[in-house]
Length: 624
Image (spheres, rainbow, N blue to C red):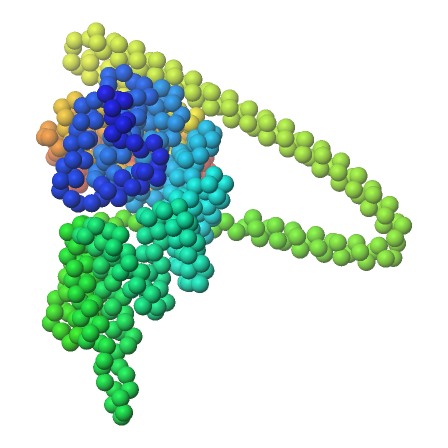
């Protein structure tokens, strides 16, 4: 059956995945039902054994949730990753990281998306997987482009272009050239952008790549509109209509774009001299053309679920009616634009982040200036004492060579020593993780022999605490920096793990992780991880008495420390209960660990929220 599923879902190449994302994004009811049917069929085929086939199946299910349900897609992405890790299947791990990166990109969580795609890229590079490297490189460029880090995006697109040329991949070449053109378009370097668009179209035509040619043409048409070359833009748009199915997503976008082009023509060519008067000649005709196309563009965009295009076309439609003199209709269309815009922006959580990396280049330039000054000084001295200069130069060369040779050897030994220490520490974390898992397995085995429900619950909770500590050591030996843990991703991993342990009643739990990317040292991360483990376990034990539930967790950094906020959808602690008098093991652990990390535990009854204040090891050391 797994072999049959592989024939049905051929997503071994990520470029094919991009096409799938586009298809799944179509709000066509029959297609959506077929997609859900595929997912349901795949879930029914999940085998009982944990191997690479199961990881591939989880990966395929996660892909089918793309543009449909990112949370479910992420859940199955983590399952695929977990199985691949247990099976020791490196490509499966890379594929899982890749699909997780795409789902987080769908959720506009760009830092998380970038983190997972870099992990996938690292494995693909180790395995020399050309397709994986190419798609990861291109996708990283797309993420930087979406966050307006244009220089970073351009560097990755150029790397992808060189790889495409080296492996003779015309499809990738055309895609890279189009993206580079969009970078220069965003930087307002229109002539350079047009050159790259022309190159992309030429490659696509040469190899009969119609979709890549259409993408380059559509973007070039928008460039021509910005350059006020409306005739050229309209010619391209009308040509593109012949390539797309009537009423499809792309057809609607092109149709609305034609309306926007006619609107710009109407704005720019409103009056002409006629004797001693100015007579409107093209305003009415062009505005009418704009209205005709924009009306269809708005209707089609709403029908296909393209809210961003719908509100942009609505705004242009309002302007067209205003040019035409239809003030009431213009006002009505502007109100529609406001409603559609608010609806679209309410789902937009785009995060902007950009980094500057110019210090190294500046230092190199300063060193070069110093070298040039030294060379000039040596040239003057050489004219005065030529013979002495030659002798000193020879001596200097010998000394410098000896010094740098010794320094190079010392640096090499230091790097090797450091590398060995890192390997040793990773091995220690790996062994600790394995030992904790062995103890957890023994507890699981013991659970099968215990009938008393109280004892069973105690064993389950003890096992979950061991697995929380095991998860921290697992993350440490799997990442480059073995001294820190990224808190947000760890909390999500931990919730996924605890959900599998305690959620036996089919309760649908919504996990709202609002924690920013925060790196914590291991001395802080271990106690904090156990605190989060106790809070989540407590929620599953007491909070969820219906078919659905939710958990909200967030973290803020304050001067001198952090605050962790935790809340579930349950009724909370009884009114008036004094948390200082709670003597349960879980509460005792939370209070003790809070003090261990220099903080305190509190409960805000009116909001049913637990608050943990704490400090990291470096802050505590400084205060001491």
